[in-house]
Length: 79
Image (cartoon, rainbow, N blue to C red):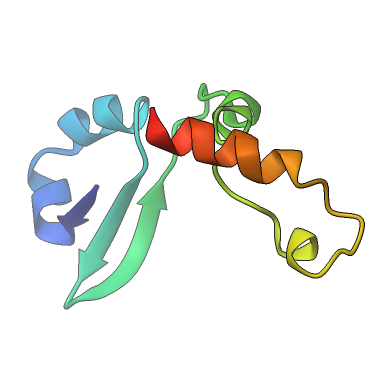
């Protein structure tokens, strides 16, 4: 979520509550000046939920890359 700095100043309590569920990027004059990230979020679980959807850069050029990851990725993206 992207919000203006002036909006944050007016409704800070609201955005602190929202930050528990999603990241908030604060902009001033169209430039990002701050970011709120919830401390109780399970980042590892979020990354695991992406398994099979994205590839890491080292997998593009790896000759030992397992093509089953591509199949899994395609199945996950279709859902």
